[in-house]
Length: 603
Image 1 (tube, one colour):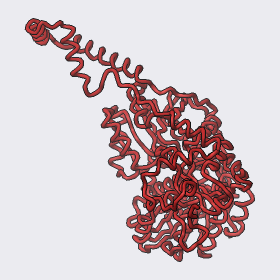
Image 2 (tube, rainbow, N blue to C red; image 1 turned 45 degrees about the vertical axis):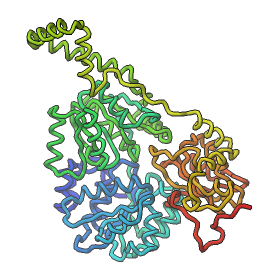
Image 3 (tube, rainbow, N blue to C red; image 1 turned 180 degrees about the vertical axis):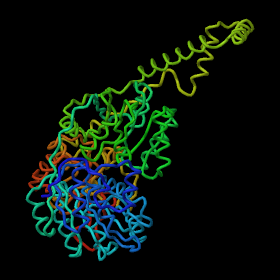
Image 4 (tube, rainbow, N blue to C red; image 1 turned 180 degrees about the horizontal axis):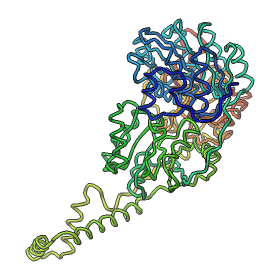
């Protein structure tokens, strides 16, 4: 164990090259975190490292910076490979590494994960990416296809190793590491050290330096925390309502990716709320200009990602919106810490999907606070706000402007048309509010009758929804469905149609070890999952049954407890044995060469 205390250590004392130090300076990083101070020197010296630290402690920079220092950009082959448990974390790690390497000319980063077509990933690798970040399943696929070659690999990193173990990636990790050259420097990070992780470390790491960072409880900030449960209304609509009615000086909206910063900022602009984006694609001059705008009051809404907003200290920020929840709990603390600075009061509102509600308990524990339920402003409140705003604006005009000429015109119009002054004022007000109605229309109510019936039948597991979905599919061609004749076979092969697949859910494909051979039907799958972990059946996506197994879409980020519960659930006396899969349900097709995978023709 290295004997380094928690005192502030500057990056310039750790032996990093100048191009990385200058990039850190432009990103606003000055002092290293404990995990960085303890990890960077041994990695630069060539030691393997076993890091034990909580998420959000700065692990990406801890392994990314020394690994980048070893890369030769003239070699157009992977020299750093990072294994991450989820697509979101892989994207976040790749974005951070790109930010650190902004002064490394010719460096390319490839991000490889399931759910994305192979074409763009092949292109990234063919262009000579020196850094590869990916999920275990997709990395395995590329190694098998020989599109990913590791003969020049210098550093291999396992990030969030315990999470990968919890998600059933042990065999995938072992298989992948078996293909890593013996000369590769290894680095493993994990928040905990269960037996499975120690087994991997003992097998693949050579006399590693063990760096352990104790979890630090955060000081309770003067921040009121809220959570709005995303339902019925789109997130961008909710965001515009908050922007219109909330009392704030300036706000930061946190999103997941760089593209999202631009997308959300543009949508706010179109809705009449000027917003600026801050992301890693901007150069230092653009970043400074954007931050200066926010500091001076030139703009009041900033849309940003975690990486670029770390350490941002702007006193006038009084509201933080977590438009997308962060990939780890510690990042939540960093985000809401952008408000409530220096003893000031602040407010944080998180947009939380039903499958993410469990995260709130972790946020409360980390902040020693309470996350209250946020009631989104309804249209009546918005109408009152708009009317009051208009009244104040008109009162200010009357108090500050000379309206003599306007009064004369109105009086003439009233006399010539025999209209009352009230009618004329009402007509002018109507004309004024055409773009933004003073009294908004009611939100369209979702049609619940059919949906609720289908969901009840799904939960019963009786299969009645199968026949309904079958009737709804009669207009489709057999070729498009890839099915034979017969109602039962059609219900088993086609994705469920009782509800359309939700487009507001980040889906993950899971494999169940139960199939048609065991007598399972889609209704059985839905009923078992919904009842066992109390999951609304609208959050169970497409189901594709095969002879001996089934692929099903469930929300990404399933809690470990729920995952373990489903492991031993039985359908038709067969245990589900659920595992994570990179297979896309919608694209799954039986292989013609395998007789057991052919759809059976009904009698």
